[in-house]
Amino acid sequence: MPRRREFEPETVLNGAMLRFWERGYRATSIEDLVKATGVKPGSIYSAFPGGKRALFLKSLERYSRLVVPQKLGELEAAGAGLAELRGYFDGLVQDLLSPEGRQGCLLVNTAIENAAEDDEAAAVVRGHLARLERCMTTALENAHRRGEIRDSVDPAGSAKLLVATCQGLMVVGKANPDEALLRAITDNAFAALN
Figure 1 (cartoon, rainbow, N blue to C red):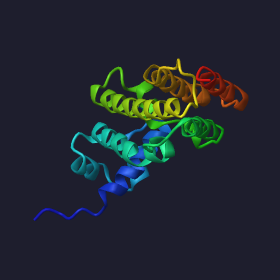
Figure 2 (spheres, one colour):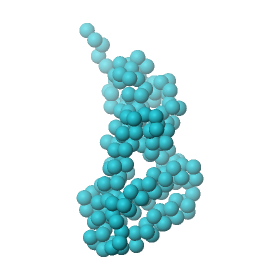
Figure 3 (cartoon, rainbow, N blue to C red):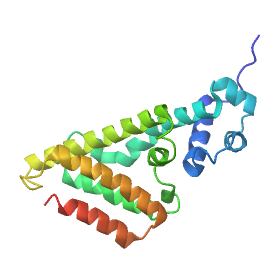
Figure 4 (cartoon, helix red, strand yellow):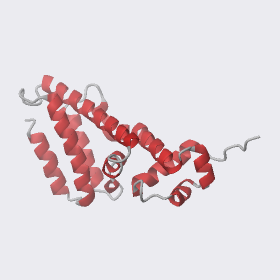
């Protein structure tokens, strides 16, 4: 008879996700994952065939499912407009000013560290960027209909620029969490809409 698992896979995934988020994929060893999850290496490999990489990909999925909706907040609502879009950017700035927030976004970190070499990780990142772009396009279309932005603003094109801006904002914020700089980047991005 096979032995019964002595751990919950979701608990292991949560611990692994937090460790990868904190340290990155390459800097996280199996020993780090054992410490973070309390699960022996053999059990990790048994529960997650493919070992560290499989656990990392599952952690990215978990982050997308649990953390991203919290960060997007009202921006993901069908009726989101300019206020919700600005609220999302203001939330990013606030996050980047805290020690926890300087960890950045696990998906942005993955784009920088892994996406060029790992097609599966890149696919998860592309999915995240597409989700952001959809949310921002919807918010800008709503803002356009409500007269909150200039008539000449192209919602789809502007959403692409704002996605790039928020990704860059998170990278800059990790290296230089200067509030005035982060707010200037955000203000300039929104100035193009009015």
